[in-house]
Image (cartoon, rainbow, N blue to C red):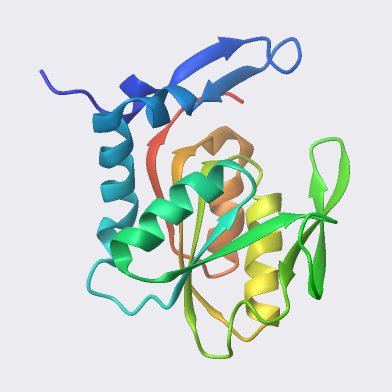
Length: 177
């Protein structure tokens, strides 16, 4: 019997704090079949569409986004935490579960009119993804879609992005947080 994406993802109880079920994709990345399946399924809805760049959210979105960009034959844009990119950047504040943070992208990473696919491993509240979307749009890019390995629907991220007019593609979903 063949495995589904969720079969490659391990759950770590009480990490990073008590009561959290952490969905660990490193086990997916470590398995060649699982990793290839995830990359193929992430890009499937976008095959044949014009995608100029793939933007990956720090940090696991870099791993997935780089592989998706390679398969689509496009460039890759890292969206990073504040202070991690050299050169001139633009910044976007966003809300975390317990506070605020800032994401940045190089100010020349995306050209006006480029179609950009946003990729990350997990969609929870949608705050980080929304920051990435805002950065792409501020540079004049058009978000072609948002692709994630895991959706945590109880936390409302997919709904939040859909209310922004985004197309959300997730390979699997887990209840809880």
